[in-house]
Length: 383
Image (cartoon, rainbow, N blue to C red):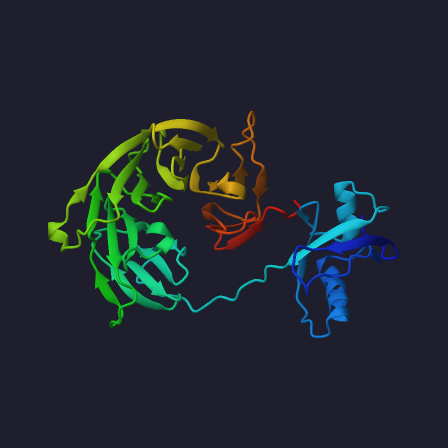
């Protein structure tokens, strides 16, 4: 039903933003057909009346923690909220779409990206090389050594420098993991070629995914492989090792544990807590593992082959996963007795290839798809 332009709704604007972005708390009557942009204009007018130097900016609006994405009257009808009461509208700064920066060219398909470091981006490519990009513009290091396409790249300790060096780990279709470290502050002619200081072997097929222990005194890398579909391996490496000689003299590492349970390719792993690992697989399952006991502690079957997995939300307790359909699903394993997703997002038009939670927001996550789109999601959006 279309909103009646003559109807009005009494609203009170509230916010957790600091002054001078606090509007007067008095209730006012606004047209019932207003949407987000119209509500933003009213809030900006109220702020400008109190502060003449106020600069116009867009806002988002929430009712009971849910984003308003419909005209007010339609939203109230959809949620069964009486239009007779004073509606409390919480406003927050809107997330503005970013403009695309200049691309960082590669010689082949880009197969892995890690942007967890504030100054650098780490990429992996089908040419068998990983690259470090400073400020998303200049390639400063090229990491060599793999004999096949790179499938996964990770900063260790989220890119925090250890003893003056930055540490990264890469996984490849050549069935190996390689550790690299380098000084990012030294002036040099870019790009500098860097060899690995540690190699891990053991898989019988492609390494598909890597996760790093969230603690800082030990590195654990976790990978899933295509043909070793039932295994997830743990590899242990102390960060204070000084082995940095040429590749020919490197000591090779081996797996300390293998987690058995999946029946097909393990496509993604994540390590949100020191004693807990989650893995996703083409066998349609997400599994939770206890690192100490090397036992499966929880599993969930979603009916689709899964390509990606990440943990986030409040307390990193929500699990997002995508795979062989256009739907990004979010589960809450804390809710006993149900395996139904708590959120589903279905705007993609093809299979989902990757998903990632925002590092500091409980509400936001991003996904990519074979439809060529990257989409940002907000859990508070009215569905």
